[in-house]
Length: 113
Image (cartoon, rainbow, N blue to C red; front, side, top):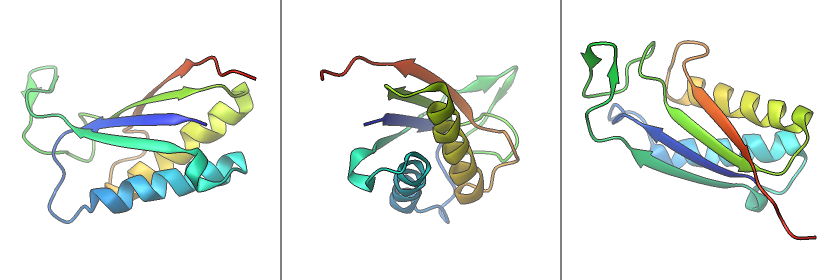
């Protein structure tokens, strides 16, 4: 089961964070051919400061200050590529981000069995 941690600046009031994490859960599960309850997603808001160069912003812009996503999973490279693609697309659409303005890292984990 992948664990996905998302950290981002405060979002505009039009963004429903519960909807966002549910969408990420569903899309990642679909990419893996898994049940949605096999995917865990958490969200943390970055309370300033978050700097990109000299720019420190109070709210999520569409083109900079990418949401920071960390994925913990034990999957093949192809599966991880699908997971990252699903996350990127869901966040770009739900948060109205410019394409590729999501920063994703992946950490392999050991699971028994």
